Structures are given as C-alpha cells and as structure tokens.
Length: 244
Image 1 (cartoon, rainbow, N blue to C red):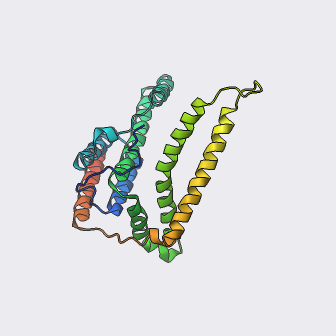
Image 2 (spheres, rainbow, N blue to C red):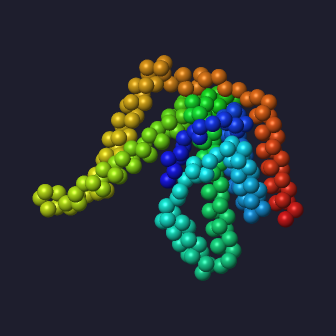
C-alpha cells in the first residue's frame, strides 16, 4: 500500500485551499448519487469528476495505493461466482464494486488535500443546526477527528509489528509452535492503547478536546463555485438516469 494513504499530499492547489466542509458535502452528494442511481453512465461521470479533481489537486501517481494481488483475486472470484446466476448479476456486481472504489477514491481525495485539524471544525459547523435537537455534534466531530489522526499511526505500527513477527522463530524453545494470531492481536491491542494514551495526554496538554472544534473554519467564494460545479455534475447524473 502507498505510504501516502490517509496523509496530506504536500503542495498547494485550489482543492487544497477549499474549506473541508465543501469536500465533505461533495462526498455526501456523490454517496447519495451512487446509492440511488448506480448506473454505468453515473459511475462514469463520477469517475471522470474525481479524476478531474485529482488532476486539479496535483495528486502524484505515487500517492495512489497499490492494492495487493489477493484483493483483485477476491474481486475476480466474486465475479466468477455470479456468472452462473446470469449476466445481470455480474453487471450488478460490477456496479457495486465500482461504487465502493469510487467512494474510497473520494474519501482519499479528502485525506490527500485536507489537514486533519480542519475536519472536526468543518463537521461541527455543518452539524450546528442539529445542536437544537440536543445531538452531540461536537463530540461526534472530535471522535471522527481522533480516529483520522490515529489511523496513519496505527498503520505504521502494524507494519512494524508484521516485520517483527517475521523475524521471530516459528517454534518456541520447548518445541511448541507459536500462536501467531493471538500474538499479533495482543500486540495490536497494546500498541493501540499506548497510542490512545499518548494522544489523550497530548490533547489534555493543549487544552482538551474542545480545541479540536474551535479552529476557525468557514467557506469562501471558491467553495461556492465548487458546490455549483458539484450541483452541475449531480444534475447531469440525474438527467442521464431520466433520459436513459
């Protein structure tokens, strides 16, 4: 997998300078379109839109994740299982697969172009009307922000644990085989708790979780233009569904 997964790509562009809330709204619109009208024309338009955004954001090819061979093998196996059912089943399977990959690509574009400290304030701003319903928007935004901050660290720790596991002998001194599953699960739990403790101490030293949502975050003119462009793409998708 690419080491740039869930990390901001260095540099600047129009997409980098957009408000994080605009990007979250865009992903929400894409999700709704793909959920309700997952046709091939809509999938193609969304794919072209995401590619255009990636080019505009100057995302290098090396940032793209290199999926392992077994991932593509599982996708091929799923298609093979659907072949006896009928061609329509295979088409549906392909649409669902494309749906998942496009949502993954949209989420990764946010990670590549947005500092993690801007996600929580944007979520808090977008969810501000829900506070009247006593919904804990700030707490949800903080939870999402902490998860996003922790994932890159946990991924690196898992790689180190995997490499260390390969260096260990397969058998213990008494001749019994090591239980790899239990060992790796225990190590992952210990590392996750250690990271959580370190993150909690860092947040406390900086003034508590309230600081995560206190970052000034507001949309600008470029965000309005971007949302208009998203609306045009969404209208095109709906029109293609109605006409075709």
